[in-house]
Image 1 (cartoon, rainbow, N blue to C red):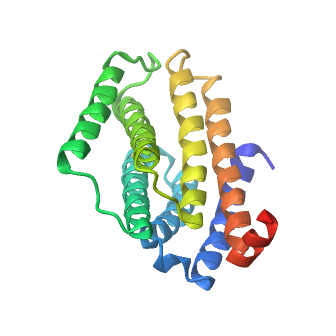
Image 2: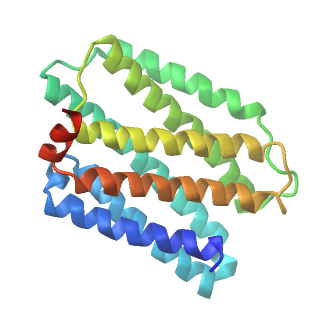
Length: 226
């Protein structure tokens, strides 16, 4: 079994296990958006395999839609984590001025990618997808950094589950952003696939980390910390 086949299969299996854990431990009540995001990822993974197998010529359009939906879900999860942290600490959210300042910072980071290059032999939907991936990659990483900065500045405590979700997302965002940067220095050819496999492998690793974390109860974590 090649990595192209093995990684998606492993991801789907881990997604199912994670969904069962989130539901059985009622964690979906604390993080409903994250729970629906996992359902989206499982469905999109199965749909991706079906499109590749039966409609390969339509994959570019499917990838563009899937990329957009995935990024919007990830941003929604980050927003949910912020709400969970605020409720956990019983504090008021920051003023709109501070949020607006952070959004301007994120916007400046996004605009900075306008000079980024993409593989020269890309065109059409593939070129649009590459540009969108750059935008979403920078925006997601900037949003996560802003979240970490805000919680650190106000001395807010993270609930255990929220911290685990943020840790996994942070690792994946970092690897994916590194892959995006590396793509700007290569052609769309032999070097493209190994980098995508690296991103996929990091995603599988994050899923395995989440399964390990969510399989442990609060009591298990407390005993391990003693």
